[in-house]
Length: 260
Image 1: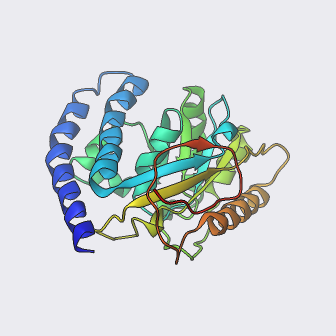
Image 2: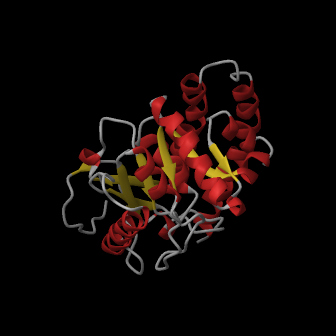
């Protein structure tokens, strides 16, 4: 535990040192196109994942990488940790996020986030937020960006299920874009509001794309929820010994604990 805390402290200090100047660099990229700005901000993400690996010993593997479509789609992902906000950018093509507008007000971090062309909504605005998601979501898809949404809206501790909000399903049924469900167990290594990042190998599972044609938003939302929650339960190592590893892309197969 002491060693894990020390590793997390070193990681956090480096993050604090690196983020402000990197955010200032991204501000100078404002005149560039959204895709070019994304390439710049993505550099920070790659660096943070690298530091997590070499300092904290936190690796990951992907199951179902072959399920990623070759066209801009909507990713609906489980949200347990801050980790997936980094990793999904490395796993999927250039993307924008549907997020609460308050995040853009965070000094440095929010400035860089604003450069990624997100869909920043007021979650209390109800139907107006849904309309904004559809209008701006359609624009981003036409610009060849993927869209990432956390249906639960906030980080949920392992073993628990939050309310799946309908925004992502609403966007899919109104645009016809494919939905890609994503499950993972990141919260078991880097929990909600946890300072410590435990070493080990996070499992990310990508489901088969869902065509929303002919489906109602509620029906699609329930289908996504059922797959994600069942898959999270299947890949969970909660209560088991964590194990170290490295990133690999493997077929969807029964999981076995391994140690290195």
